[in-house]
Length: 583
Image (tube, rainbow, N blue to C red; front, side):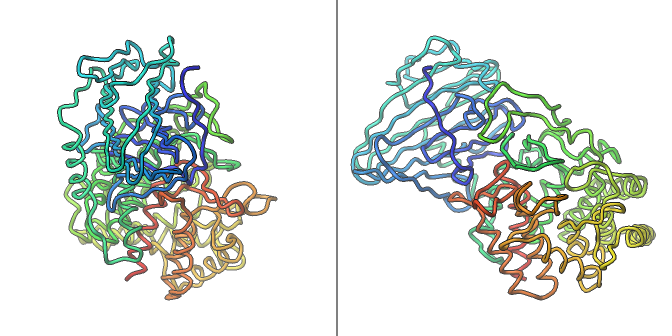
């Protein structure tokens, strides 16, 4: 094979570049191992992360140690390597402003100290490696151009690169770079759907435009705990959010979670619940643009699909792709699955969470006439469907999940407080009372805490949300009993698990859920127990790697991230905690 081998790293070592339409995962050897194009849900052009051979690496020669950091308020990443005789950085980003059919990848090498020597290798492969660099040629200006199936590529800054491999699917471009101390070198890779991309501006101008765009995208959130991390969480969510307002749950597919049931693999879609979490989190910090984006995307889906709203969509509002398997080895311990069965589910709680988000937007006077029409649709959906079994927050087998009904009651109460009408709030509050009364009659455990469903008497960390979101008061005996039971039975070493697997100890079937740890921080804050709230916040805030990205799960024993990366709703809850605990 002509392509260089790219060994996988632990998930905590990957950084993310993103421009809202797609993302790149960067490893500690300067290896781009994941990028889908043109958009999040499309096929990958770099897929070494899940066992393909396509990648784009800039790596120091010889022995070195790795580090890195994001420039504040952005997803401009700097890989930093300390070699035996040199210190070198690679500044990298997806250029902004962006558009759905084109991506520009910026990489700038900077010799900080000493003479730096690096190897550069580009091996693109569209369609999850079905198409390599076909019709590869160097133009008169030194740019390399190629066809990648339906995509087109232009690479500038590597005129002296050498092609290797006769089969396009195995073809690579490689070169060695030597930089004197203080010297810089730019590489610009442009991808475009359907036609050959042009690079109209020099690298300096592309960098300046990208820096300015990030300043405009990410507000300075200061009235919160851990403001640097809060702003970083906002930047991550912004990078995951398309121009249409859809925010993907994560940038990747098929990364292992070790869950036994109800889990799927492809998170490159916009989950309605995640949008609502993000909107509420941002609203807690202020009426910032990501709140409006989440409202805009979900209002459009409600107006189009009504009570038949699907749990997730592509970022452009289309149905989620059906599941299919790729012919790749997968990330170690994982699979090679794209698409998601969630498209066929009914999840009642999303209507309640949407009402919570619409209420938060209304509190900032950011809910327009279309938004209020969407409110009425969500209320109608709850009224029509709340007695139906649903897949619930964890996307399991249909059941009458307690969490779903509590969240709907909370959403009805929240939006009633902001309704411009007079008759509607009374009807909405009456519906909330019916939901709460029937749920209390059927889904309360003998010890006084909420149980998962009418038939399932186990605990579930999502039941904390009944009080957190306001379905019932935080000092209600049921709220207090649920908090006490979750803390006593679903936690380990400062982390919280979703629920107790049948016949198995915590941590064996799956990792702790960072989302649940942040819920505990909010629950203790409601009880005015600030020491415990801060302890849960700090413990879970630290469950990341050098780039500060969270995945869905955390392996407590091995202190490793598990699942797709980065997980948007965990960043959302971290931001919500940072804002609310400061209050």
